[in-house]
Image (tube, rainbow, N blue to C red; front, side, top):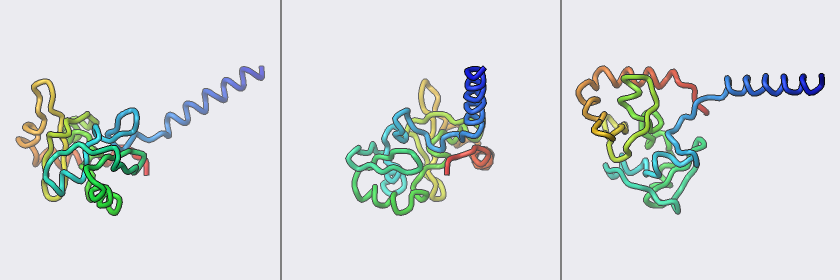
Amino acid sequence: MRLLLTCAAAIAFLGASAQSDPLPRFNVADDGLWVDGYDPVSYTVDHRAAKGDARFSYTYGGAIFHFVSPAHRDLFAKAPASYLPAYGGWCAYAMGAKNEKVAVDPETFKLKDGRVFLFYNRFFTNTLEDWNQAEDRLLPAADRHWATFKHRP
């Protein structure tokens, strides 16, 4: 009887944890690395995608970010929200069109009104092209959809 009660309590606890566990905010690999180690500051400061260096890393919101230089790391540390791509680094098109978190090609991005948007670009599908054709509809939809996801603080 004691074993049965212990098992029942464990199952109840696991069920409650799964329901209250928020979805991850950032597009990270299993090891916690954000978007293949690309430097989020490079998009806005250098207007290019650049792979960061593990020597210049910073952890924010449970994600590990790599930067091309200590200067980029320090800029990010002072104001992370200023440099983070929209939707945690998930595909902007998928967020707007399907309300889904989809992986990206970090080299496929767009800057608009001070915001960085990343896009899926594989297997003959470049969602940046689709985004550009319907941005007026997709951007507000993506913002609405992103707001419905639960995130870690």
